[in-house]
Amino acid sequence: MAEEDMAEEEMVDTCGANTDGDVRGVDKENGVITIGTSQPFTGRAAVAGEGLLGGVQMAVDEVNANGGIDGCTFELAWEDDRFEIEQMVTNVRKMIEQDSVWAFVGTAGSQAIPSTYPDIEAAGTPLWGPVSPADQDIQEVYLTNPTRTEQGRICIDYFAEQGVTRVAAIGQDNELGEEAFNAIDAQAPVNGMEITAKEEIEVLSDVVGPAVLAVIDSGAEAVLTALDNAQNGLVLDQFHEAGFDALVCSDAGSSGAGGQNTVGLANPEAADGYLGALQVALPDGDHEFVQHWSALWDAYDGPGKEGGAPNFSLQTYSISTAFFELFDRLDGDYSYENFHATAEALAGDPILVPSIPPVACGPLPGGHSCASGAGVAQYDADTESWSQVRGFQQPNS
Image 1 (cartoon, rainbow, N blue to C red):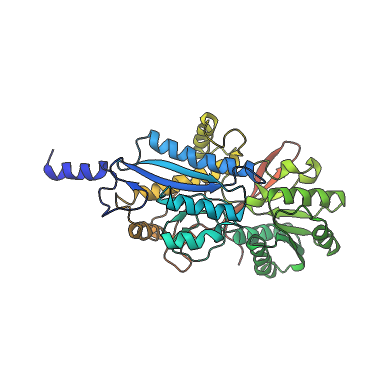
Image 2: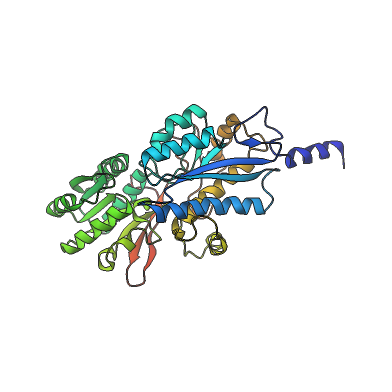
């Protein structure tokens, strides 16, 4: 073997060989990269959080079992935030300062994630694929799924396709709800719809009755919601009890599209016909990639498997798969400068994971919304299953 070929092989096989100096989370001596995630593993959103954690851990296990990437294997540090803002901030600080994570992957909790941005920016730690926060044009943050605002716009497009002319929204009194109201304000006029009501519910509150009654009284024919799974279940039940049969559509996190996270909390009659935006393929799809994930999930016995929701596992497994593809493209240079340069060049050479839209990041401003377009799925209570009723499309304009 020629000397230059041996040097090339050494560069490929030695973890961080092209990384100058010390970088947080890069253990060159032992060939280990530490990444982190915070999930609601217990508490109000535990079913989703367990599945989300399981998807990340499963992807890490798979990469390590296949020999790692360029001489590096991966260790996942994770913390339970219980769906609480203060706990997520504490978790992120701990994982940066004590666990020395190189990056965060697939962290969930749209109402809490923005509160972590000051610490993430101060440390320079990339946040890859946070689940459904708004795009705030932060250097460290890369969105690999359409925002909740975009998902809401696509729900409204679907309403229009069904002949709806009067639409309302119910959202939490936080950024999550604000995204739904932004969606309805932007998209209802595009489709010539009248907005009849925009109602707020307090975070973690079970008092949904006033918002429900206001929407019913408004004469809406369809409703966009941006709530947690428990609140959505209560809203569906109260609509049904009142004999209100309007279409209801939620973003992927609120609806748990593809699983039982919301519909399992409502009466079957109330949940029948419920609509959810899709950021990721349905977990019972017949695509080879989804079947591969399904086989891994069936065999997986790590944290999150016992009570986790498969649909959320597929989401973070897909996000993590894209992350490891990006890591592979770094060619052993794990400086954050190279990470950002490589990620921001994806618009010209997207990462293609079949279960999610192409990941095509670009420079700021705007370029860190790396994927666009969402589908819509509908729940059938008789079969306890979801089916996709609208393809992965951009919002109407």
